[in-house]
Image (tube, rainbow, N blue to C red; front, side, top):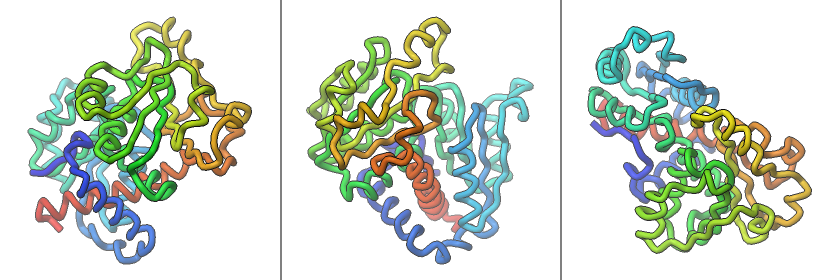
Length: 307
């Protein structure tokens, strides 16, 4: 049974095909309005979410399907001690496909190995978030027209930011991509990603703590929030939470074609004064996420032979 747990579960040709499908959905929505009629998506969210859960649900409804929703662990038998494996085995009896978010790294893989229907990882702890990366890729394609030959800056929490980890893994498969990693020392990109992805593929990257100095050379700036829920020490969080705040004044150093992205939710790291700047793309990402999730649901249900 095909599931998507990591963005690397999808090869480059599949990523390109998914973005093609998403663009066709945008252009011809009526052609897809009944594509998943009588099919059910279960959304199992053991961790808070607004965009991802509602995006999955909107995606399935717009494909003509139905949704079974579990919005919190407290509302499920997990509160009684039921394992992830048992939960997804049960839900597989009711649904045709599952989207699951869980605070523990590796939980999505456990789910995929236990379920009898496709499982989509909607975020597992600080590990990865493949469907956010699909939203990011569609945004890049619509804004830049290409995935290769780009200089991409990641700023903020690069240590715990699962969206950063997935996006770097995806972009690293395209030619001519360069990375600028902007973070405080405590929130640097994990060494295993630098070793297994960047250094292994000889992808050029630089590390810096200076956002303003990095801005002029970027095609894309991917801002992230410092995630309170990933810290064990409140004092460390408070010390680092406002490390980078993007303001109109700082953006004066950036080029006119810069695309500013953010997986959201935003806290302080992007001033609301930037929202109307034509370079701001983060709410476009939200919309793009729905279309890419529609494309992925279609792909997995077709491969499972249920469409």
